[in-house]
Length: 493
Ligand code: BES
Ligand code: MN
Ligand code: ZN
Image (cartoon, rainbow, N blue to C red; front, top):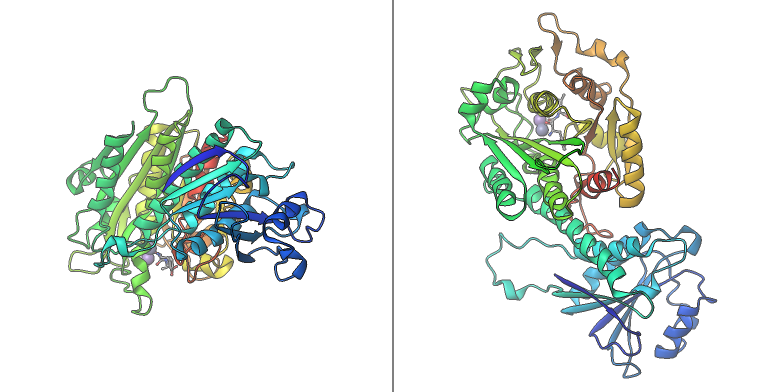
């Protein structure tokens, strides 16, 4: 989608459709007067109340050059945030797309309020439209031209200077496209989105941005001793890849932050095979890896002034004659021994080696891992929030601040030592699962053994990875969870 800006009055602009935000109980709002002048006393009828999520299409019938206005409710003024705006634009974007409007205008003046930052509002508008109208048609055979699609977005204002608006549209587009890229990878089928496919994405980033990419194949992984990762990969013929991406490797005097993403390209459960129902959803068990790859692209495009290392261990988890068994004892890259209890707890097997690798070789100031790690997290928080665990308040502060600006909801979970007794093994240093009680917490406790005291947060995105119907700026399918969050963490660093 092409995104541009223009300093122009609503009545002079000439577009097929313009989106206007309207507050609830906005009788006194000066912006309301302007709409009434164009389309008559439409709001007086009371059909459109400006409630959040409410949308109304109005035809201007020649009173101004623009043909259609899409009024979108913003709710009460005192509750207005950039997230309200992002959601409102997300809903409107699909409405505009379904009308087959190729160029959509958004009048910034109808969204800006004094308490909100103008660049942040502009960014939220672009994000809402670009994320909300996302669709993936790469696997359909019908001609591309048959699909409705918004080609162009114009953000305009009578008063705001174009270079200010431009700031918001440029970053908004980069970030929204990263979310969409994450969704495309996460929701893509396992026979296409293989470890090799992800490795090629990382190599594309090397070509197109300044990112430095290193890929370890099975032999190299074995040679280095990433044995816990390899234990999972042993069950599949699909070549595993241990992907390392670096942004800002040559920057002087900047801090290093590591991002680690679980990329199980298909999680059958392995020898501890999952039941058949819903197993197809496990194509998205590489969402954490997709978060990291997509975020790395945005980080490079925004040229964030940090050294950011992205590590994505990628493999299928399959049952076979060579697969790892329940009861196996694996010596991890950290040197600690792990008793495998259930081969379906494969995420923590591949992540522990990646965490140790990051801590040892890059000595980061902080590490963040993203993983569709436990069904228990879905039970605990449902689809609306990402549960996270952290060993350090400094990382917690960064996440909470970024959650506010990005709109990505997060909730801190406990990481108390008490849970370690569930991980006691008769034979090895620890078991890798602790039974059903507190399943997300014991998983996080397990990972905490491999962080080498680096300030760290583990984000369990299993609940928030997808949704079952179109809502706000998330169309049905993968949500691209925590992509905006982590970009904001790094932007605000
Ligand atoms: N990838 C799954 C977790 C998952 C389940 C994510 C459903 C999204 C939706 C993970 O590898 C897994 O299977 N976890 C097990 C752990 C258990 C064996 C300790 C689980 O949650 O049941
Ligand atoms: Mn599993
Ligand atoms: Zn899994």
